[in-house]
Image (cartoon, rainbow, N blue to C red; front, side, top):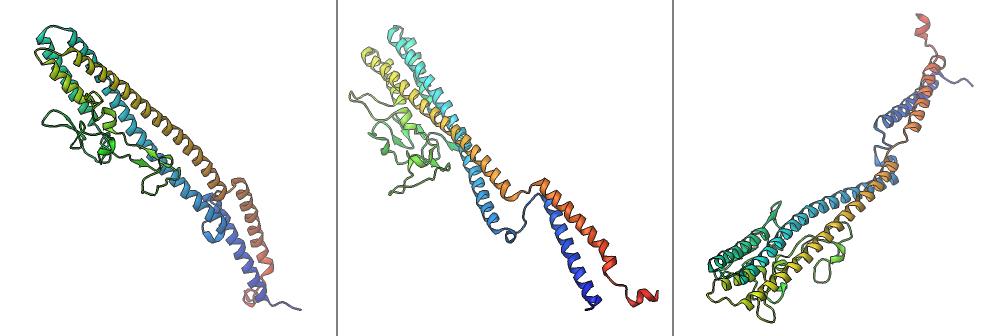
Length: 327
């Protein structure tokens, strides 16, 4: 049976166009290094790739949160260390004042204690990147002195408080770091599923009074100690009580600094964890989306040879028309 020339030509052109399309597709893969450009080309791989990309983006967000939190806590650690130094110097100077006899020197010592107090307040009012470090949930300078010279935290007296819960703004602030942050029945964050980035100023400086009626707050202790030094007849026993209280507060602040250090170390651990997870995810992403260069180039060269062969066969398969003979 004779096959018409038109059918031969049509079939040849179909095969030629298919070969050219395959060559172009392989060339695009080699130039872009991508296995597919459309979801329809490989739906399963595309869906998995989208999930992997989403997790990588989340990890990058978590890592950014962690690095910001580390900077914030490092700033808090620096401030707390400075406060600890001021407390130690104040305790030493108060002890010297008790043992001295010169009234003028005692006035100078009293002023020094108030200077230490003011320096501590200034340090505890430090901010970082527009956020006050020790203010809890209220973003403004937390510590001020009242008209009576006693310390206020966000406008509330620290001397009359019996618990840190007495300060509404003294609540913990948490951020999501990829541990599956959860909330309890009260709508509060589960501390085991997030990172605490806030540092309580009143917990650092103290609040309320002890069983003997002495202030538990560092700044109030310094104010009261300065008042004692200005008395004509100094009650040395009372002053020694404040020396002891300052030493206790110094130890408490050092414990708080250690807690900040532990949280910073925990952040470093989680940054390393996220870096490792992201590296594994990126490898998975490459396996899903990126071609094997050697295999892709080989396939392209093979298809290029097939395409050239197709071109060469064209002159033999396509029959000359009557017009070609008339020439």
